[in-house]
Image (cartoon, rainbow, N blue to C red):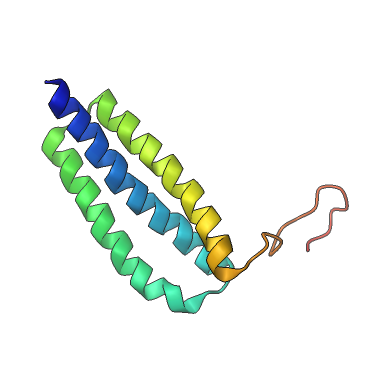
Length: 105
């Protein structure tokens, strides 16, 4: 039983990591106008999303699936933010608002 639970949580964590990584990376591409990444990532996002939906339909709703999917999603988003900055050399200042001055950078 615990083997099935661990496999389910692990599979969803990995799949959701990839799905949310691609979504977060795509979001940054749109914000930073990185046109070249958009179409390939869209295909990857569709494949990852369909796989996650398929797995959830197979196993049903459980707290272990939610925990695995949630942890994978959070780590995927953090990883995408970090990697996008490294690949595109963006410094995080594009379209930000400074609270101190009220001006956009």
